[in-house]
Length: 283
Image 1 (cartoon, rainbow, N blue to C red):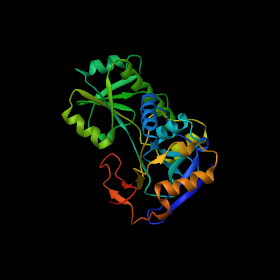
Image 2: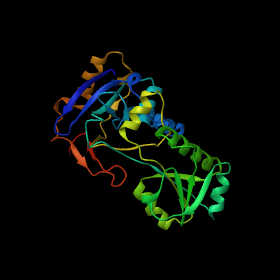
Image 3: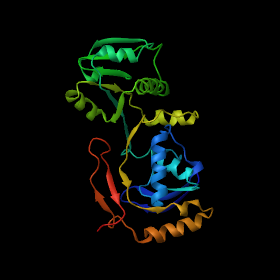
């Protein structure tokens, strides 16, 4: 991975750096609508506000795949990132994005969408007994039959197939955390919850090492720090001169004088991300 560490924050255990975009490795597919929206926003504002999170060792994009893709689409060669030790930092964890889908009038309506799938319908007892992928609707759970045990990549390939069937049938899909998903089922009784597998760091690294990529929203990474509102000019990132980029980054964002004490910490996102988010400066 081509990278340059611009500023190290020892107390936080992370760095702000510059990476060559072509050396970074995504682990999830791009959602075209989201990419188009981000690209328009960056083009209009002329800046990237929030730094993607990247593994300092492998170049794996932990968070910010669409921001990196938008920069590349706008002609940038480099990306400003938050560098972190993916495997060595125990504060980095992986959870899941569940899919809340609906509305449905009955479980038969769901089964109609899933026509052609090998499924069984059983009574739903508790979330602890669920095997992903599966669908919870009211007091029932729909389980998908497979020949043998699905590995991490195959499991999310199946999730993506199911999600695509719901979308093509015109149903709204919302991405929610595990906690939020089961909470919403109690009040949104016309919706079903597509339960997805929880991956491990080894799962992610194994898949990218095989040259493969997961479906969108396969992972919900928890990281200890996210840098928001850094505001790096996009035109700066189109330069071939890395030294010029680093120098300008210092000057335009005043990184040379930035310390942990200068950073303004704001609350995390509760059940969704639960992280410390830092704005560029106090005040």
